[in-house]
Amino acid sequence: MTPTDHGAWRRLLAVTVATLAVVFAMPAGAGALPPPYSNFDYNEPFVQQTGPETFVFDWSANKCEDNDITDEAARAFRSDTGQVQLMTSHFTNYRFLAPSIDGPYTHPCTKIMSSHNNSDPSKFDAKEWLASPWTPDGKTVYALTHMEYRANDYQGGCTSTATCWYNSITSAVSTNSGATFTHSAAPSNLVAATPYQFVFNAGPDGYFTPSNIIRSGDGYFYVMFRAQPQGAQQLGACIMRTRDISDPTSWRAWNGSTFSVQFVNPYVVTMNPANHVCAPVDFNSIGTISESLTYNTYFKKYMLIGNSIGDVATGRPPGVYYSLSDDLLNWSNAELLMAAEITYSRDCNLPDPIKESSILDANSTSRNFETVGQTATQFYTWYHLDGCNGTLDRDLLRIPIQFSNQQPGGPSAQMTTVDSTPTVGEPVAFSAVGSADTNGTVEKFQWDMDGNGTFERNTGKDATTSEVFSSTRQVTVTVRVTDNDGKFTDDTVVMKPQQGAAARPAYCDQVNWKQKRPCRDR
Image (tube, rainbow, N blue to C red; front, side, top):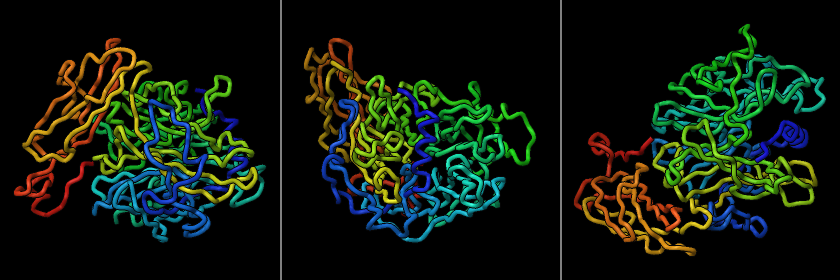
């Protein structure tokens, strides 16, 4: 894939810079769109659309104000009451509330954070997008913010908005379940800035659009972001991590060998800039893709999703692309997930393009939706044009999708169970008899019954098995179907075991049970 280049980004900014956006929500299943929007070209068999495309928010009908627009990829977390909060923020930050990722959503017209619009670039406190929330308990919510300083908002002398654009990543926190966010006196909340001060008509410069935050098994929190080329800083998608998400100064970026890059404030520190820039991660594979980062329990790999201009020379269309990784550093070559017109490559004679893309899974056991399974929901912004000019009219939509790792010429895998909510201690049957191989024979069925990524059970050519679950822990069961050529395909089902009617409710531990408080994995 040809990554998004600097020139394409500059062209995009020059046309659309004044048209940043967010959106509101209709009940789940409402508002299906007519063709061509309800029939995107998905990259089957890897991924397929499993239901109609529906509105989450229609800007023209549901906005709280004109600047209430969707301008970041959709993020979500579960509050301490179990309610889902969805964020697709702009520099006027609102939120969406729902009982589930699948809706129905409400959209309170109360801002959860306002931008400070500080005209001093050294404060890193101008226009602020809440971009990356993460909460340990649903009450205290830490967030990274995409901070834009655009000099022509405050003074003259700029040839364009884009050339006077200076970006950084800052932080904010909520102590009331996401109802409001604040931050310490700027610039003490600065997380990541390039080691260069603002220069008129030299941009766009800086670090942009942090992904959602994920916590890995090593105890670190990770986030990816886009870096613009400037001085020693190269173009690409960078990654940084911390063990203390509450400390904005604790993040360290990858330098190509270790996570040792410490970000500095170029207005207060004299240093060698080359020592304080991040090294883009696997640029030849992912380019600048950094919008949506999750761990996929179906593929047992990290998954990165974002928009790309594709590659006209090789016939790769613009659209949403994906990449997989075992370690967050080495990524597979980005492949098409869904072909679509995007803002980076829009043609004024074609349908309105799409913008920010992400995926979320209603079945994720993570409070912060850090995981995605075989089935998920794709969110994106539908960006409406006026001729060839951008507008504030942007809608948030979602599409249910399903992944498959079926290899070309390989078998299909199809697993069913008699009960996805079995009683603890009682056997439940699984069947993969619907699996098939059109150009050979199925030779082996293997099963991962505990969701740890290891196929501990081999039933040979027998496509059935059973299992007794000993706890109420949610488990993703996977079958691997292998054909006579050695090619294989997996299918999964999410199991949610329940206590028997006479047993106490399925709470995580004795403390939570006594307090009648449902537990949720973080």
